[in-house]
Image (cartoon, rainbow over all chains, first blue to last red; front, side, top):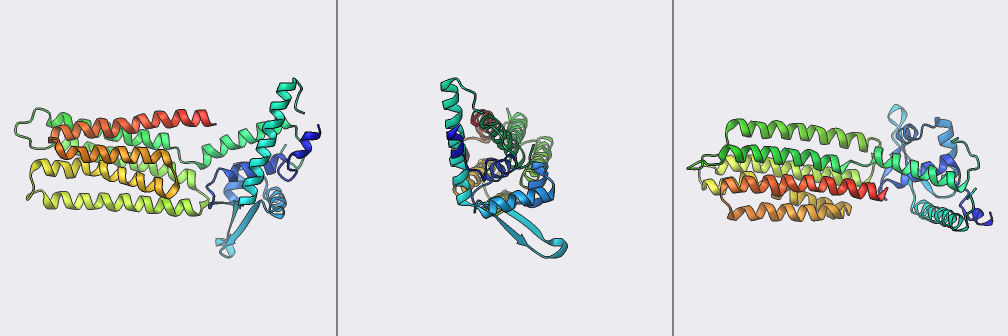
Amino acid sequence: MAAETELDPVIHAPARLRIAVTLATLRDEDSLSFSRLQELLGLTAGNLITHLRKLEDAGYVTTVKAGRGVTSRTSVRLSPQGRRALDSYTAVLRQLLDSASTNGTSPH
Amino acid sequence: MLEDQDMSVREAAAFAQDARARARKELVISTPLVYMAWGMVWLIGYGAMWLSVRGQHPYTGPSGVAIAAVFVLAGFAIAAVLVIAHKAVAGIDGQSVRHRRIIGSTWAIGYLILLIVAPAVSSSVSTRTLAFISFAGPVALVGLTYILAAALGRYWSALALGVWLVIVGTSCAWLAPATILATCALGGGGTFLLMAVIETRLRAHGS
């Protein structure tokens, strides 16, 4: 299972993987509101903030706050670095699955 | 299951696939549905007008019922497309939103110009020219709008549709009014329905 360590640990967590994949569906310059992302993923606000912070610390997402008070809106966008990281994560994942099926082993 | 926990490679692949499918379903405008809506409007609308002018000697134009049916159908299609688009793009901000506004405004202004120009020139041009402006004009306009959308958003499948619709609309310049309506019904509406099938298959293949 040495190859599994090649998977980016920042993305290799269920919630962060889903956040990254969801944001990657948007076009390069687009962002998604925090509330819509929360609704799509079914996470609590606190949980989503925690995972977004980890992704942001790695430079994979950028959050932008616009407006003030009740009209304030937080948007989240996958950075170019985050998009590249997700692409390489997906490639490694595919390689691991392929090699497991070739060797007849279970990729756990 | 969504906490920061370990997951196997197989679980990760399943999570990614599930999230991708859900995000595409929720955040991407369903082009097959949009194509289907406009395909039905054009096929039925232009088809109804063609049936009402078929065999007219001399040509006097489509019946009021057929024209009213077109406007009612178009109203339903516009409402359906707006609902589909609004649901998909809720919460999204950025360049693609600005592009959609440009595309929508171009289409709306173009239609408004056609709605103003056609009645204004009706008494000074031949019935054939008026039929070309009124019936083929919208097809060419939608074609140009799709070419604009392709250029702005790199939606390359829309480019083929746009170019084809411009060709269909322009070719009507050489046709008689009844033939223009049949050409728009089949070449415009039929193409939209075909594109709906192609896009559905491409999406199923790509997911």
